[in-house]
Length: 113
Image (cartoon, rainbow, N blue to C red; front, side):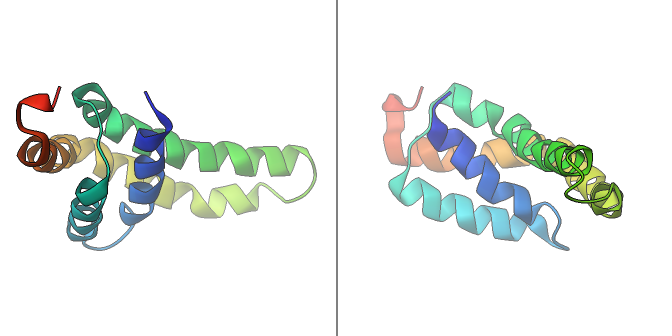
């Protein structure tokens, strides 16, 4: 996978915590697809990359606690939000992939692969 896919996933990861995440994601996806291109494999991997980004935040706060730069409370206070985001992404995996795939198919036609 190329960095473009992970950059998109990092941006989309924040929306998963919103009250109405898909509308925000869909708007961002639309803008991304105006200028960006992903392969079919990258598109199918976006939900996992979103979750990877969410979970990397948890690892970041564990590292800060181990280094004595922060307490575990910095992580535990966010844990429920991280879990909610991951669950939402997993529950809406197909919808996220479809939104991307449909726009890229419309843009690229037979070149979308």
